[in-house]
Length: 95
Image 1 (cartoon, helix red, strand yellow):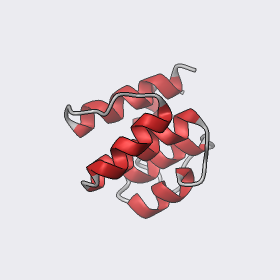
Image 2 (cartoon, rainbow, N blue to C red):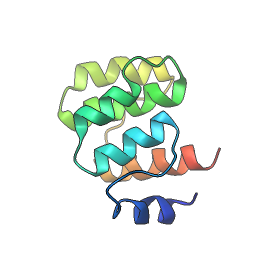
Image 3 (spheres, helix red, strand yellow):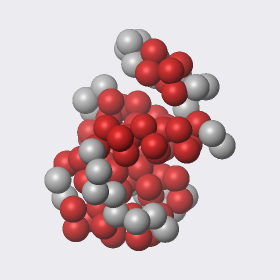
């Protein structure tokens, strides 16, 4: 899947088959923060922890986000949320 295909899938009411971190991004993009959080909140996988950090940053809980960035081995993001979303999406889809 490409980022363009991912974005096109957002027009659907149900997600395509996606890994939990990508499903979390999909749900978040559809406005379902709680559903997105449930996709990654118990995972110890690095990608899931990275998305978990992004979600807490998006909700404004920067302390919790910093914890998850550290767990994911990523620096705390400070740029625009949309830019971070696209960077995470590209990284996850490039694997």
